Length: 321
Image 1 (cartoon, rainbow, N blue to C red):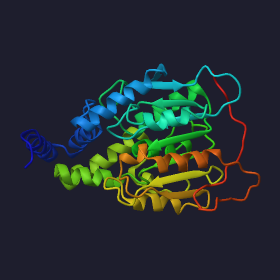
Image 2 (cartoon, rainbow, N blue to C red):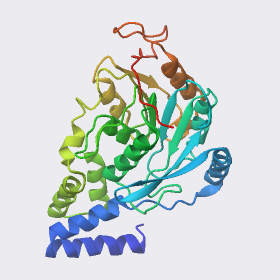
Image 3 (cartoon, rainbow, N blue to C red):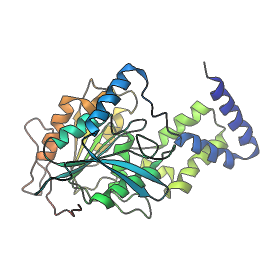
Image 4 (cartoon, rainbow, N blue to C red):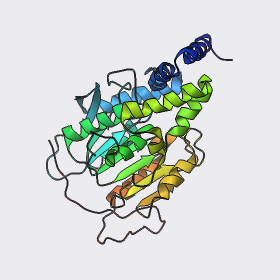
């Protein structure tokens, strides 16, 4: 049964929609972007968060300013000397660096410099709202502060935003530099999220139209553009897509859509781990490690015997201390 607050919100949007669909659409977008509570719910979540916080204690902390907010970043192995790889890790909606810390610690154990980013409205970043524009602005701030990345690894919404950020998808925000992408349980389109939200909030058709139009007004790209995957993944940049066919939050069809973009995209099924456990699964770590370690000697794509690894193109990267 819907809560009293939900009933009131639905009623309020319905009434406002009769008066001004555009204003109701703006309010609906604001509600859509409202981030969930940062407090872990349930004993498992509390344990995972506590253990994650303990892993982050050894990292340097950076509060990164960007237009519209501030984002917390954690850096592992920042003081290491000599050549080393640099990785960026970005969590999904309702998550934080704590919940990604097993993967972050695994990457750091290879000696790489690893930056874990809390998106706006999450973890220890400022704000109570998150949308694609805010997310990519925070990712761009990390790129400006730390330099180019050897790989960017993102889960769910974070993975989708990394794909867009690497493509320079939004106007007035430069593309981040990264040699490789790893997308874990990431959506390849966005419109379905707004349609689901509209049905849940029982929005009038005119209000739904204005809600979707607000995406274009806020981000500078129409919502329909987010559903055109071709061209988002640069064919010169190897991509590893990791997904579970039993993912109940982001359909496995999104992984297939990414994989259909070309031979530079490798699809790795991590079945049995769903949408959330996938970021701490040993087989996933192994797949990522193999992908990041692969060296390319020719311009032709190569795979390992089990067909899980893409070739990697070596290019110079900018470094920043």
